[in-house]
Length: 244
Image (tube, rainbow, N blue to C red; front, side, top):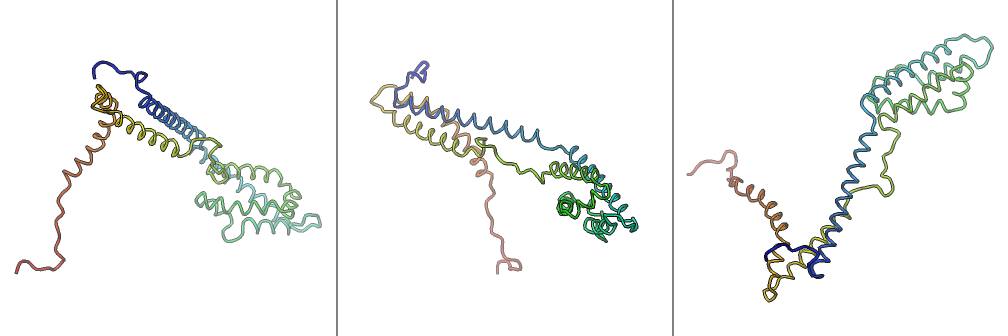
């Protein structure tokens, strides 16, 4: 075959499978572009190491401040007023029991989070709220709650990453559609070649040339690996003697 053969001039027998493959390949390419963009957005929105460090420092400071406030209230003597300092001592024992006290803030982030999450549940109870409000700890508690939330978000303990509805996922359907369309197209092109129809074999060779070249390129590394692979040599068992 000589000259240029535009796809538009192909017979429907070959042209339609060609267009189906082109559409499937274009869809898969668009999917991969959308997935790459979504992944880049996720990486951009992810907390930075600087934010994790700042959140950790803020959380530690707020925990220490709350511990100091609670210890101060627990150190008061009984004076007949309510709430009783006994209640403050109860709360302190719940949050900072001996011998650990505040040492949990020196642990790795996951351990810190687990330890503090349990303590935050205690602070939600009515008895704990009575101590906080009665001894003027509302501001300490509010800042502790905010720092705790920031810490959990920075380290990914409170956010579950879910794929948005309709967002790119694995791409298996697009890959399968493109593969099946390619297989169908190649079969149609091969069946189009017939020596009784002048030019049909040259046209088939022209259309299949990129795929033949691709298959050959993929086979080259395997051929090189096979050529350089050392011949297996059996090793006699340890302690075996030589030739008698």
